[in-house]
Every structure is written in C-alpha cells, then in structure tokens.
Length: 425
Image (tube, rainbow, N blue to C red; front, side, top):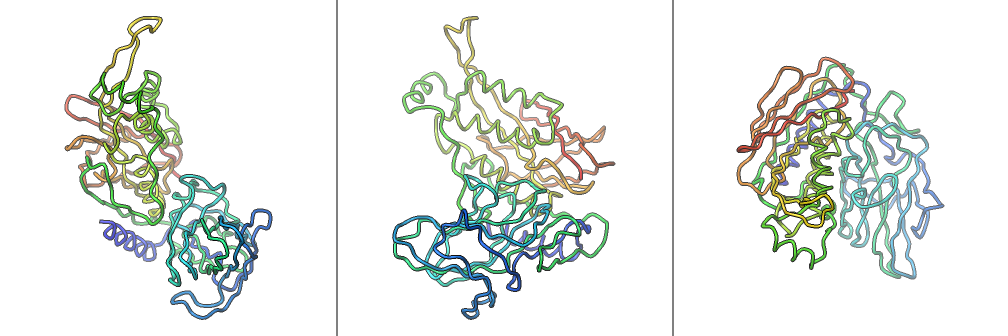
C-alpha cells in the first residue's frame, strides 16, 4: 500500500511538471555543486566544517562537486549543524529534497528552525548507499509560507572514534513564492507561466478504518503515541467503572464540545481542533491499540496536502466512543460516568492555494473503533455535496479570503454539524 502511495505521489509530481503552477510557485535549488555556503559555527557539533565543492568520485546520481563533512570524536554523541545559504527564500509549501550518502551506517536527520518531536525528519542510511530524499515541509513542523535561510542536518548516536564522511548534494525546495525566490547562485525552475490553477490529484490510500495500525506513508521515524494521563493504578480503577477504552474528565470533554459547536472558528483553530480533540481522547486511554494514532494521521494528511500545494487534502474524521466523569452535586463530592460518541471532522491545513480544491474521504484518515463509516456532507453557502468513503469532492470558492465550510456527519442516531474555515489564497 505504501508503494501505491509513492506511485501516486510520483504521478502527481509528473502532473505538476506538465500543467505547472502559477508564477508564484517555483522550484528553487539551494545547492547543486556550484553554490558556496557555510555552516553556522555557533551551533555546529560536526567535527569539522564542511567542504562545499568536494570530489570523491561519482556516487550514482550524486556527481561532484558536492558537500562533504568528515571527522571523528573521542566520545559518543550527535553531530549537528546548520547549512547557511547566501540568500533567503520564501517557501510556499511543497517538499524539501536532497541527496545524501555516508561511509558508515548512520541515523541522519533534517529539521528547520528548532529541533523537536514531530519537527525532525529521520532516515537510517546504510553505508556507501546514495539516497534521494523528498520531505514534505509540513513533516518538519513548519507551516508555509515561511522564510528559509538555513537547513539543519545531523548524524545521531555517533560512536566514539568512528571516522565518518557524510555527502550532501542537490538541495532544493519544490515550491518557493515570488519571483525573487532564487538563492544566490542557485537556479529556479519556473512554471509554464499559466495563471490557471493546477490540476489536483486525490490520494486514496484506503484500508480498514477500524484497524489500529496504518502502513507508513513517508520515510522517517513514526510519530509516537500521545503521552498517557493515567497511572496504571488509575487505569485499573477507571476500568472498574466503565467499559469504554477512553475516560475523560469533564473539563476535557467540555473543551471538545466547544470545538465541535463553535461556528466562528478561525482557519488556525479549524486546523488544530481535530488534533487537539483526539489528543485529549487518546491521552486518557485505558487500553492501548484501540484506534489508529491520530498524531500520525494528522502528520500524514498534512504531508499529502503539502505534496499537492494545499490544493487537495484528505478530511480527518473521528468516530469513537469514550466516557467522561461529571459531578452529581454542586460541590462535586461524587461523580458518575457518562458515555459519549465523538463524531468529528477536521482539516490538516489552515489555507488553500486557489479557489478550487479537492477534499477526499479516505478510510485511511479515519480514527475509529467502528467497522462502518459515518456519512458526510460538505456544504459551502447553500450547496451541499455528499462525499462517499474512498471518493473525493471538488469545492469551488467565489473569492479569496477566509471561507466557511459546514461539514455534516451522521452515524446511526448521532448527527453532528461543524463549521470549519479555510483561508483561500
């Protein structure tokens, strides 16, 4: 299934090359052998400064000159540093690509800005093998548009007295904004010049929505589960009071209700609301491996949106049961456990590029403990469109700016209507 996903991404990239995007979106090469840069000295822990025009022979598609970093240390640790480029560029989305190779088996990492959980892309490199990496910028914990003037790289868990060489080449971003987006000395592959919106591609991964596991769509380390709110003793106590797999306090249940019932959400709140609601649920789990990891689904959906320049993305859906505690008196001397069915939708992006977008209803991006899926309608103005599982629907806006969409979900007797918003750029 992952291979099928990569094939569709390759087809989408081919479609981008044929149809092109508006002139505001260009591929920009930061390094391809002819450019000269530097490594930030204040943050460098690599043993040596890089050589920017090295020639150690041809390594498949990596041909000299390329960047070389070599050395060894007397103690075990991480080697990190920021590659600085002569000019900054405005990144509108898409992917960060580069070729890498190491003389030893290493754990290689890339990040932009502050390194942290969910912000670093990792790849295990086998010795003397060249890798071509394509990393959605959304996987690096940044939301476009943003200004890029340096890229952080690292080798992690390096052994003592282990002499290692790392080669890096062909560093580029697929979607830089504005005509002045080329780094000094770099090259820009512009679009065809058409002002029409690009064709969008729907990525339907499919699968069994109720399965708690999902195949990995991207290279790198999987997202960890959310932290656990309860101690083992608290879990045991709650399991004696409820059959539900999740047990929330009233305050957290109320936060979820406020997200679902708020019809004035900003685009940022619309993007974050689904993730935050599912965090609260899974943080209060009483058992593991009940539903798919919503943190991973959110990151994967954001990656697909980035690959499509925010013109096509999957709808994030939740359909699961949990319990919550509520007070039986004003002083809350005692509580009872109530049952609740969470039916919710969310977007993996706060904005879209262009007035026409495609939203897919993919079982892969449903967090559920049910074997069947809710019905979904998406409405703009007075027009509503039913979207079936495994299908997509096209939405067209009449103007730019912040636009409201109403998502209607129904499962059995449970019906929910949410008002979400997107910024159309």
